[in-house]
Image (cartoon, rainbow over all chains, first blue to last red):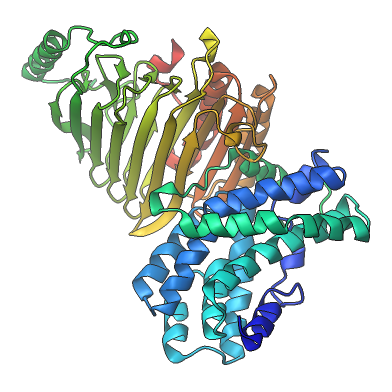
Length: 225
Length: 312
């Protein structure tokens, strides 16, 4: 990976990217409230399982979106974008990906990093979930697909570690230890995302759906998902 | 009272008789190991048409062991209820079933089944079911089958696609049971694949793809099946449901799922989703019926009259 591409990926995957990622816990806050995530071990356990769910659906779809943007294939981008949004099965999970996707999509336009063909494909989407905006940005910045996929999975995992540090709570050292230990899981998730065939995808995660639904009516919460 | 022409009655009687003759309880119980099985193909195609305020079943083509009984009108002539019967009682590896139902503009139909759908242990072949539902503008369709039981080592592919026109409503419910837990069996092998897609005006509004291998870590994963054996889902597509009704439905579901299970509800744009995860198909039935009872008046503008076949 060239240093220019590496620097661009670091910026794209940074928690300081202004898309509001820090306001979403991706179901984790409900698991903390339920007492399921309560220390370093259970935090790591949750994020490992969460990455497994991502590796079955969102990550392989991001992989397909990266290929589709690269080929400037409007039809393929539209197909996977629609499937990704419709596959988000709770109100908060749908809002989370659409709000972040909207912000990142707007950033791509305002930063003037994308060519006309990419902008046109993005503009033609009825709704922009985060992976679609991320794939468009990665393609615009010339980040290799394999690295973009790792970057997206890493920033999701990092976001959850931050939520654990804040809400479990975990110490800073403990959080960094968890994140470091997740690297091999992230690599495995990326490999799986690249190898799954279309009919091997699965977004069926009723346990996670129930945590998200529980969060909608949770009395005390600081995150939006 | 809506009357069915006598000739149609005769037709159904003959169909039923011929089906029983062709498939004499071939696998009304679990087939014996090693017993040869000729895969069954079954197709059913239904068409409902609104006619002067009544909904009539105007077409029912079937091939093989999938039949419908006489259409019923327990709520009057506006809504036509049809019970779909699969005489063999269970699906063996290699069997293929196709059900297509089309509800015309402003038609109202309710489809249900008389008993659990059983998917037997695979014999090296995949069993398939393909359901295609199409609801025209202003129409409604309720898909309320009894529970689905996946026997240990079943290998099944299910496809369920729904197409909705403008202001059409749809309520679909499924109760998936993994393994015959009543007989102490768990789902240790085999594979279940299911795809559910709902489109409104051409736009995909719901998509679920399930791929679960028997005995895999996913069955214990707290984010997936969480060590439970029954997962039920109700999806209602139609008008937005008021906060008060949603709250009542949430309380009702939570009040029923108290035996170690959990039931919750979320409202998305144009869609309400209810899920139950637990170990009891009976509790799942009660949760699904209760949620349905709350949502039906909002979605269909009709009070909830529980299909008689669900009361058994």
